[in-house]
Every structure is written in C-alpha cells, then in structure tokens.
Image 1 (spheres, rainbow, N blue to C red):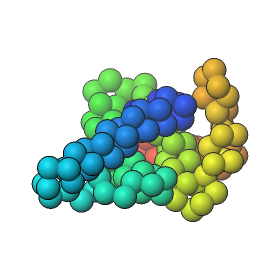
Image 2: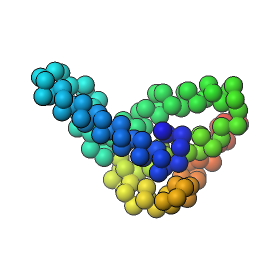
Image 3: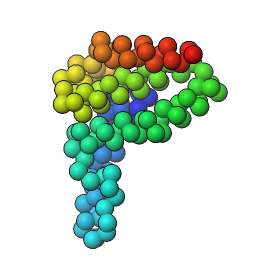
Length: 127
C-alpha cells in the first residue's frame, strides 16, 4: 500500500510480487501466454512496477480523495518517500537507503532525500 510507511508498503509490494511470480509459473505450466508485466520481477522490476502503480493509480486516486476529505498530507508524504525508496532500488542503491529509512516498529524515520521530496510535494498540495 503506497500510502503507508515503507515497512508496510514494502511488505504489501512483496506479497503482490510473489503472487505475480506464482501466476507466471502457473501460466507457463499450463502453456498459457504470460501476463507481460509479471515476467521477470526482480528487485528493479518490482520497483518499476510499484512506481508505475503509484503514478497511474494511487496518486490520482489520492488527489481525488484529498479534494473530498482533505487532511491527507501524511498519505502523500508516505507515497513520495516510498517513491524515493523505489527509485533508489532502481538506481541500485536502494538496499542500504531503504533499510536505514525505517525503524522496525513504525517505519517512520526519514532520509534527508525523502524529506526533501516530501517537502516539495507537500508544497504542491497547497497550490
């Protein structure tokens, strides 16, 4: 769930990725054409998929919800921080950054990079 702290976001993303990998195995087993975006989901493939999901579905949905409910800044902050962590994984530097950003209890500790991005998008929300 991209709007949750990284520890929760990553756990959900890992579960979805595992399910996709299993689906590809089943499709191959039954000689059914494999769903293209589910093939070859290594760490970078997962990160690319998650960032695409945020861009296409989560962010627009949260913008619509924010217009109705307001007070969703924390969700946007988590989403942007998670995007930074996924981008770090895409860039090959994600393991240390992602692990350092989250304490095991809450997942709320932020990197300087995550704070900068979160501040930028927080300002956008106020426009």
